[in-house]
Length: 349
Ligand SMILES: [Zn+2]
Image (cartoon, rainbow, N blue to C red; front, side, top):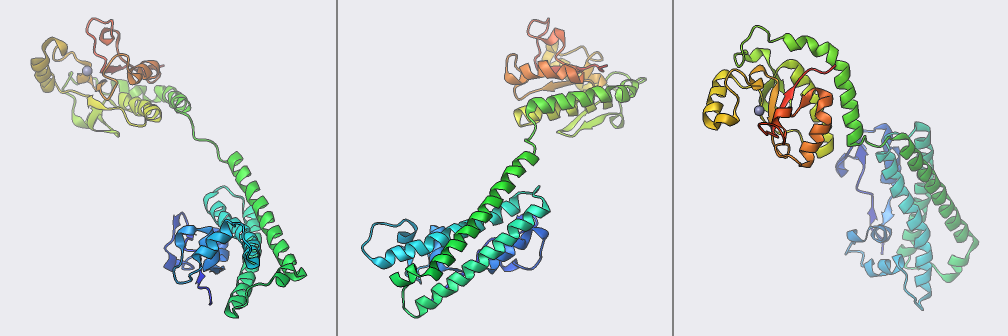
């Protein structure tokens, strides 16, 4: 019986997994280990032992192989031979698999370290190939490895150097992954993002203050659309330029905390829509011509912020003022007209 030869099916080109038929079509600097891996032909038995899911029914060796991967006590002398044979091979194959993964996924891996891993992986893969060819010819001759063979100095030496090389590779991989952890900074926490955005808001305050009087000369609710700024995260919502810029920064901090953008139900409100709002809400809406919505410096928020005491409202009360935004005193829980959803902008600094 000649065991079918399998090549490893995955191989990354650039940042994605390339389909198998494209192997070798392009070579990026990070595919060298992949090259060594693709060049490595494994017997179906070994491949099956490593990945039990890909059993090849044709070989009929599945049961045997499973036995080898997790040896059960047996009187059959050849069983222990296969086990010992496979254990070195399995260790080596596992190390090669890991090398492939580490080289692909560790973006910050220094070139020097990567070369060292590649050289060791190539050596190991060559050793495995030699070994698998020897195994295949034994199988072809229907002559299983005898107890004498197993004990022979040559076999032991080969197995020992295979194990040693696999261990050397493993050590290199351990080092690569440890240093990668040191190099790659942890993602910033929501608190850090909020702080960073607040610093940016403070720095920008002076520069954007010129926008504060950009609407002078227009009447409340009569501002031409072109003078207002669209919010990137809320379609169709517009504000005065400086109010919009600071709300964008506040939103970055909010999103880091809650995983979603602020939900804006209303922003600039034209005079005519103020009239309509007053008609439908009565006392709850501002007298037309006096709402801060008409100046493009107020928003009505939802998705949690609209209720006092929610995590969203509490977070906003703590952080929004750093961006010039706040739920004004009259709109707070103890204000004369409680409106948790209503937030206004006043330039900071
Ligand atoms: Zn409002």
